[in-house]
Image 1: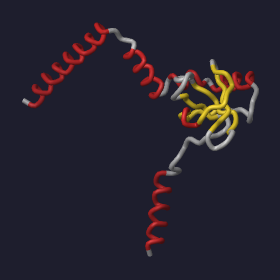
Image 2: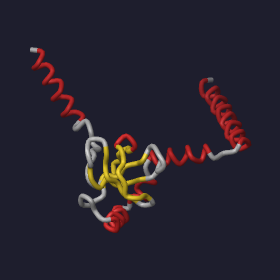
Image 3: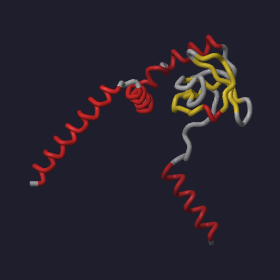
Image 4: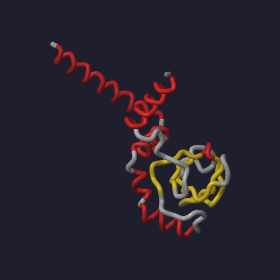
Amino acid sequence: FFFFFFFFFFLRTMLREGRPFTKFVEIGRVAYINFGEELGKLCVILDVIDNNRAWVDGPGLKRQQMNFKRLTLTKFVVDIRRGARQKNVKKAWEAANIEEKWGNTQWAQRLNRQKQRAALNDFERFQVRSSRRQRAAIVKKNMKQLKA
């Protein structure tokens, strides 16, 4: 009985949600480097070496092997063959228009905002804090008027 219940629940979940994962490690998958010297750069997976490492290449990046723990997969895939040459990777990258697509994602915009916020000096942080307080005061005043 338990087996049938579990099977029914699993089947219903799969039909409702579709596949549980949508981003897979594959040849041509664009990844974001989240650790190390190349932090913040995008790369393309050219080949899977073993369970822990991939052969990657990309604009502004030397062809190298990289641990999967240092990569975060994006939703973009470039149409290339396994172990493609650097000029073919560059052509496919430009043809897929990855830089523009990446710049339009919420993820890239959030990273850009974090970088801008980190670059603020003391006075600029003070200005941001005081403007947030002013905005909160205006919102509070308008909410009081609406409730009354």
